Amino acid sequence: MQADAITRFKVGNREFRFYLPDPDDHIQRIIRETSAFYELEMLADMLLLITEGDLIVDCGANIGNHSIFLAGAAEATVIALEPFRHCFDILDRNIALNDLDGRVLPMPLACGAKCGTGTIIPGEPANLGQTRVSTAAKDTGVEVEIIPLDDLKLPAPVRMLKIDVEGMEAEVLRGASRILKEDGPIIYAEAFNDNALAEISMAIRPFGYNPTFRFNATPTYRFEKK
Image 1 (cartoon, rainbow, N blue to C red):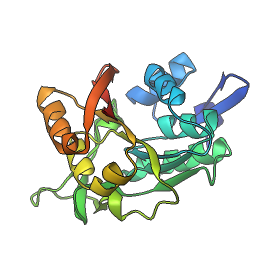
Image 2: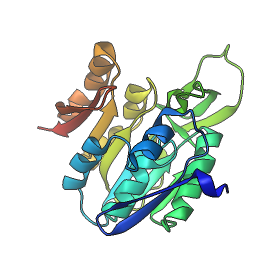
Image 3: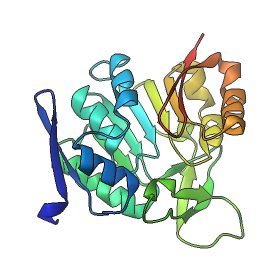
Image 4: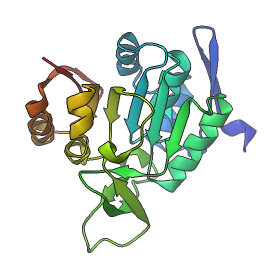
């Protein structure tokens, strides 16, 4: 591990360390330049709504920015799903760097409405966060397993669900109907345009959810039950 690829900063009395090997990537560059977590306003909002020991599912965990904050600052347990092997390997290193093994549980999986396989379509080097999973038969490349969230063997009810999966957010939610019905988690989901917001809202409205707040440059909404 390159020593100069490690960025260190504190939140309260706790020091966090991040391995950031991709100098051009947007998320890694922001963390490195600001010496702070990415999307900190939304993370602070999340922190107010969870307590120690809560179970959080992070779909599209990337390099671990959200997962590590929630596990380290709030002492929550986080299931971190990241299908892109390059980002998953960085996520795994960052979990170890912050002594969060056992509190952040990484899984190299994608989530969707049903079981299957997809193809990884990598984002540009300047924005690896735009990596997506395609289920189109014509796409070729690295295959990844897709699993509904309802099929995961989770250790506790889900308190919070964060979804940032580059256009598959509604599909993820369609595969989580049991969790939405039984656990009623607070949801943070990216919706990059009005059509995406409408699709997400349609998927979860039968469970009593409505958008209550918007965050981030790429719109991400907090959804809660009435």
